[in-house]
Amino acid sequence: MPERNSSMGRKKARAPRTGARHEQEHESGGNGNSNGSVAASAPSRLIYGFHAVLGRLRRDPEAVFELYLSALRNDVRAREVHRLAEEAGVRMTQVEGERLDGMVGTRRHQGVIARVDARQRMIVLDDVLESLSGPALLLVLDGVQDPRNLGACLRVADAAGAHAVIVPRDRAASLNAAAIKVASGAAETVPYITVTNIARALEQMKKAGVWVVGAAGEAEKSVFDIDQRGPLAWVLGAEGEGLRRLTRATCDELAHIPMAGSVESLNVSVASGICLFEAVRQRGGGAGE
Image (tube, rainbow, N blue to C red; front, top):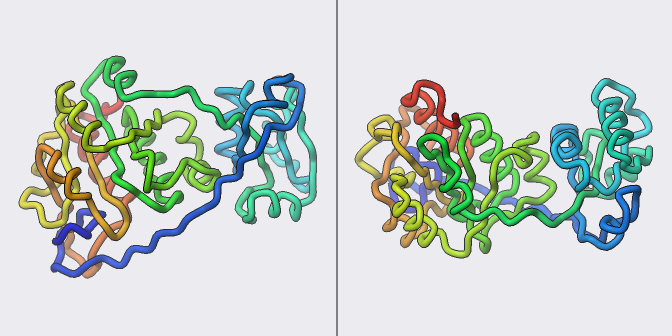
């Protein structure tokens, strides 16, 4: 398969038809609440959906500036949001659904939105590589453009116990509200590292003893032929474009997913799941331990 096969399925040499959608990140100056002057001055962004909001309230309540909850929600999850907000001293406002729709530009908010601190502690690759207690399992995304695909990849990485997801700072989807929603809490648990140069980051991994495997439909070996028991990084390319030339050249080896059906390619998050969970299988089910 030519370079355009982003999801590494090995089929006849026809380019896959993969769309890319963009979602605007909602950012503004923070609104004041009981968390004090930090909320009044810090940059903020909106996250939505119960997984994302509850995850942030449980793990980092000080970063939650205020909450908006649908006046129609009084179920178990809504009550849990209310309880955690009270414990953390976070101001919560009950509003109509139409206002929530307008705040994030979608009806997929599930009736809950949080305004959170947009500043994140800078996590660098060395932090992850130096803190591993077992063989590395890393997911590198080479320019994935769709924030929902990014969110789905984070969710897969969390499920597989991957130690981090690494993405380029430019020409790639940002970790915005849409990505966080799809990630279903994984954006709060999986280290998310942005780098200025993917090829340089791969070289850094290789110097640390990580074997770097790129997803490419035309590769001779399949994902099931690769020994994934040692320190490993899977590299998957962008929708419709595949791995960039320099990224491809930097990988230690390439592999494809055998495909017996009529489809030409797989979504990047599906391909990520197949690659990562093959590592989990080979490691006896303990990839992220």
